Image (cartoon, rainbow, N blue to C red):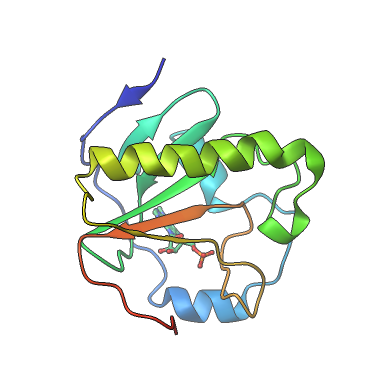
Length: 143
Ligand code: TR5
């Protein structure tokens, strides 16, 4: 059963610069901050949850709406470049759920989906995640 919530949780301090974090992050299989968000050990503002996917507001929003969608079980999927055939279902679910959440957030004029991968992709957290960003005009090319 899907749970939708607009509950806003207090969030404690995070790194000053996520960009710096991304540039210094080393691709790794180690546990990440998202494990603690999944277990609710660290609070987040959850906007959608089911048995496979968790969606919560990004702590450093890049637009009026900025949500991260993650698989509850990482199963080796630290990033998209690590995808195997067994991940096809969860990858589809992440994108389909992004569409549901975009609708829930009222992003009827469009939105941006981003998956950063590896150091050159500016990935900072090695638990695959889909960024859903919207509520403002996007530009192209991205930085
Ligand atoms: O750079 P990539 O693509 O890896 O994206 C990681 C995203 O995680 C960034 O947009 C961060 O702003 C976001 N992030 C990092 C933390 C965090 C978070 N979003 C919600 N809550 C967070 N907490 C509590 N702690 C973080 N370190």
